[in-house]
Image (cartoon, rainbow, N blue to C red; front, side, top):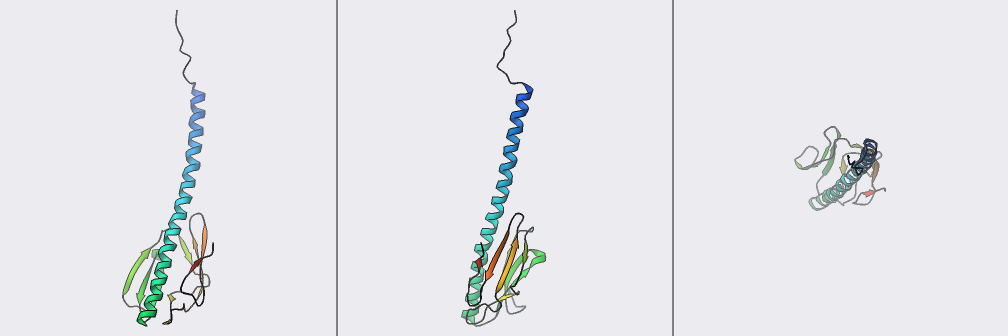
Amino acid sequence: MMLHNQRGFTLTELLIALSVCSIIIAISSSYAIKTYDTLQYKQFTKQFHQDILYLQQLAFSQNENFYLHFERQHNRYHIRQGGFGRKLFVRNYPEHWVIEPNTLELPIEFSHKGNIKKPGTMQIRTRFQTFSIICPFGKGRCYDAT
């Protein structure tokens, strides 16, 4: 007499369980990529705002021209002393980002009184979202439009 063990799973049950698991993994990974994209943007804007304030302080304290230039083909920006003077630092941003100066005229420059010379807005397009940064007249700060 043979005893049959009926405690195992059939192939169909196993395939259904694997399908459900793969769908859950696919959904969570796309959510993680979008979250990472948003975190990259937040980190970039935090650093960008600090660099704008630094640029304003340099122009105000040293009574010289300092410029923030975007090199969009190389995905970076830098602050220079004078037009083609020495670079103070360079900051990179992700390759898949597109930065468009809508009404903001580049390079960004501050007067010796600490006011931005050519105010406006710019757009940053990441893989999943589009963000706007506003640099208003008479202010030394730029703001997220979100």
